[in-house]
Length: 123
Image 1 (tube, rainbow, N blue to C red):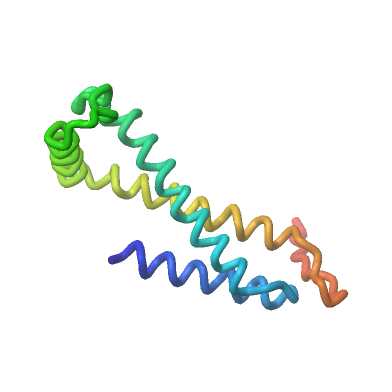
Image 2 (cartoon, helix red, strand yellow; image 1 turned 45 degrees about the vertical axis):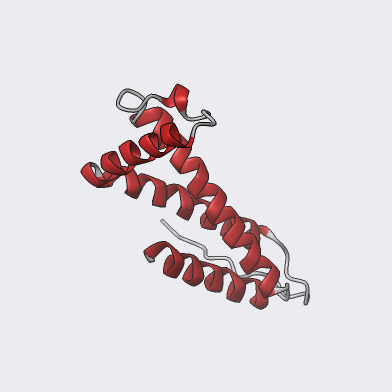
């Protein structure tokens, strides 16, 4: 549930950012949602193969037998419940997808001819 709320909020923020630049907000919100989910999938892959490979037999993940897949899913859910840091890592990868789209939006020129505001930091 938290992921859906976070995804909605982050898509809305990038949509507003795109509208300020004169771009299609709905399209950029959709791109944000896609990169959020893609980041989450990448995060799951990194966590499973990087942190959980010693506790779960990852070679059986491609098994067509539903009983084997259910057992692996059960093992992964137990690991995620024991180590909430794994879920946090997956969320960070998902937020990275949002930040990627935000970066692309910030670098795009405005369609209505306005110059994007730049913050100058003086030392």
